[in-house]
Length: 297
Image 1 (cartoon, rainbow, N blue to C red):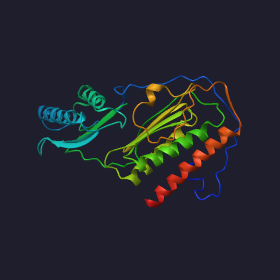
Image 2: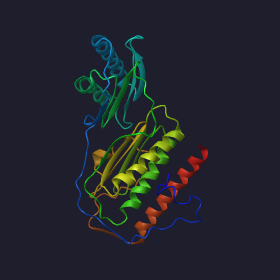
Image 3: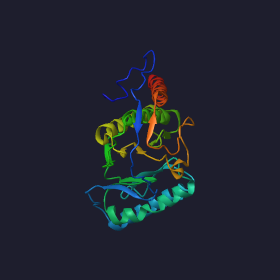
Image 4: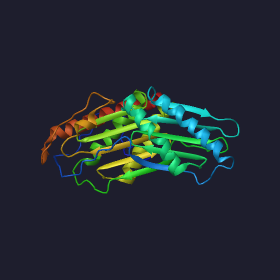
């Protein structure tokens, strides 16, 4: 699809060292997010045609079922109700949330649904730590794994030499990581943290492709934004760049790789070919891993 990652030959004889002699680090705003914060909600304009009371009862049962499972599961699909008032849907929590945090995140969703999407025949509500989507049996919608649902791009733009190379290498690492693991990957790469996750049940190859598409959208739409979030129908990718090092509270939880390079506080200027060599080598290794996984797909 013409991405930066695809344009680099995976069979090149040696990794091309990035032309990077120094990186100037400028002040940026540190961003943190609470898992219960609303990112977006999409409610269809079509409303239920049957009994509103029956729909409310089915929706109540639906959320009860999901919330009861959220203390033990990170992903769950269910169908409730009868032939006239059936509701099908699922929830998913982010892979690095504890079971307790997953439960707390899910517990806040019924009220949001009632307030914003109560009579809608289908809805999707995305929080930072979890999401739910559902539809009534009368509204079965065709879905595409790669359909763009929502995007957020930081208004602040990087004027840091080598920013795009570091970003793209981190994207390549999580693309490979989600296919190697269970559909979730967090990478702390230099001063960049990237998180990617696919919907439970999505195959490894489809998951890697979904994250690749999300990364391409981030590259094209967000450009050199210091942070961005891209939500597709079946996956998301989120990244942030941190001037003074990735905050400790954001390092908690599962990571997709143990080969992370957290430099702590990096001040003013990082000089020399050592940094360029490291970035170039890491980028090359990530692309090689990705190429092998794509060959399997």
